Length: 134
Length: 117
Ligand SMILES: Nc1ncnc2c1ncn2[C@@H]1O[C@H](COP(=O)(O)OP(=O)(O)O)[C@@H](O)[C@H]1O
Ligand SMILES: [Mg+2]
Image (cartoon, rainbow over all chains, first blue to last red; front, side):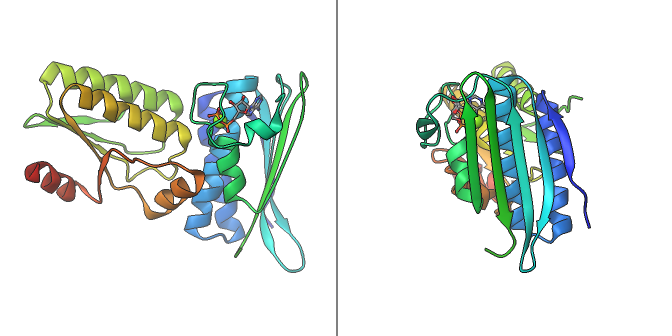
């Protein structure tokens, strides 16, 4: 079975490496090309949020498997300023960075499971899972 | 590691063909090179081939949109060429689009569009 990858995310180059790693793991797990693109896109958005809003953090990308299905889990964690209003941050178009405000809501749309935890002043942890064939 | 996108010039048309995945910094560098080349040769059109890109996320889409808007203010046109079908699907789900920008499936199609204009 494939092994998990843990990467430090602190530069735009790290964003590229993270999404390429995610795509490779998704391919190994057996995702379609379309789903590989979705997973890579979600990783790109989460990794960029780390770089832009928290300066640095880490990302763990791992295959997940149950008796009935396989997928990929991604955890993006940082110890930056955190998010004051998570509900606002999940709305389309909300951005404190002057960008499109589609990273979190868009990511939520393209995965099967989406969890975000944040303590203001202590950082953000986003966990997503995408399963094959759903 | 920086990746420099080759930009060809042909009859007043700039053709930027992205060869591999680009970082955010690489895309910003491409943006400023295209804009200065548009001015220096008085380009009438910019064609950007994105077929090598496996991901077009919110940053890439926004920057390409900004390039197209600036080029248009100069009186020139922009055509984005070769968005992979998987990439297009991911863009739609994410909520992204190239609403006011011409797109073409390959370079021949892009030149047809420019001739027809
Ligand atoms: N890791 C993070 N740390 C702190 N704030 C964040 C983080 N990720 C997202 N945010 C907040 O949530 C908002 C929405 O994020 P997102 O949907 O990715 O859009 P954008 O990055 O374009 O603003 C951001 O503008 C920022 O305020
Ligand atoms: Mg974002």
